[in-house]
View (cartoon, rainbow, N blue to C red):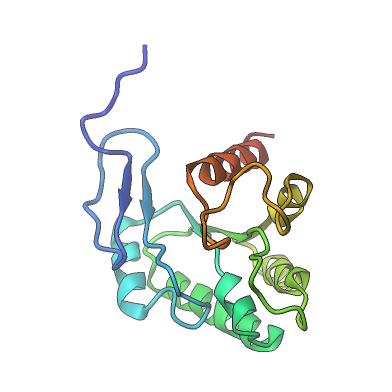
Length: 179
């Protein structure tokens, strides 16, 4: 019989300030915030707060704003490596990192292909023993993203997902990790 824990299994905070959960099970903490890019999505202070949680797994879904700002692939890769290396340096235990290439935003640059950002993440993952790459972008193309978004996965800004989009992404990630 499954017993629902007394503690919430999900916490969300822009500043990575969380109450460490101790009940058995999977606990998720999200520090994602709009406007962040590879240079500023995870500050040293936030890395220290993440380290206090002693996570087994950390997911990183960063790149949409880098793409919009036309950040060079070289700078993007350097920023991501820097954050991963710093985070690893403060974590008390070995941690698995998952680099996620999300869907292509519809208002982004066209002079640097979105797929190039994913290739940079793939290269990083292939160079690090504790890092995996997951490309979700290919699964969004058949459902019209980028494009007309006939399933209504994105909000009116055509950048951020609505509940249907998050559900779609959760199903994709679940399939990836369970498959």
